[in-house]
Amino acid sequence: MQTLKSWFSIIFIIGLIPTLYAETNAKVDPEVIDRIEEMGKYLRSLKKFEVESNFTFEIATEDNQKFSYPGKLHYKVKRPNKLFAELKSDHKQRQYYYDGTSMTIYDPKSKFYGQIAAPETIDELMEEIEENYKIILPLEDLFDWGTDKAPTDKISMATYIGESKINNIEVEQFVIRQGNIDWQLWVKKGDEPIPQKIIYTAIDDQVRPQFSAELKWTLDPKIKTNDFEFKPPKGSYKIEINPPEGDAVAKQKVSP
Image (cartoon, rainbow, N blue to C red; front, top):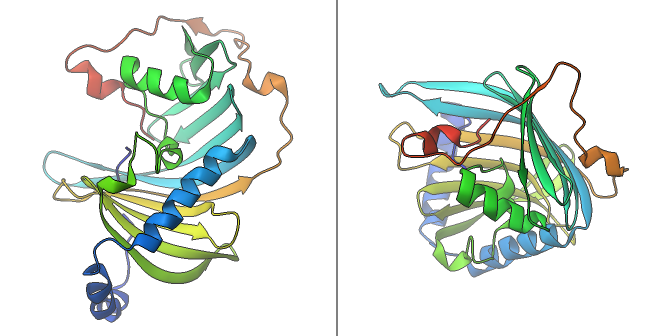
């Protein structure tokens, strides 16, 4: 799972303390679990989609300082075996192409790219690159809720906060704790339970760094086959992608 904080004014926090304290004591709300499972099931049912996101990623230093990196994330997906992802931030730029037979990772800044043989489906790809290369694409865990990778019976807290709007879309807000991660999810109301905003908080870190993102979805995008095919730009260089070893494992993980 990915980790990572938005800030509220002191007056706003003080106003919410009595209500939130009472609600979070409810522990696991089964209706929230049902809604989260519906979200995961709905997302996995989408045959194709496009999602764009503006995010903020916090990094904690050894002396407990935090630095924030803003960025953008863009996905194009056509199930079962086509994916394009682009990550742009002050920290990193990457493009990921999966055409059903291979996956290419390209760094536009250095013009280096590498390719690996890939399995036949997106789900298998995600598992393989995480297991063998320690690569975890941002937001991929949204598709795992209710599956063996993220079983909802491991959730230790699930609370319904209330209704609000994100970009004029009516949403329901939930707070969830699973392992060392606190989630806040704003999920669209109705028959299309799509997450409109997410915040992950790492609660096992004393400075509690966060990843927060607003999501803009297109459920019937115009997608072309060559959107998923990598063509090496002029002046680019091919390099080998090798499984990380030892201390290199943590350094190889994909983060914004």
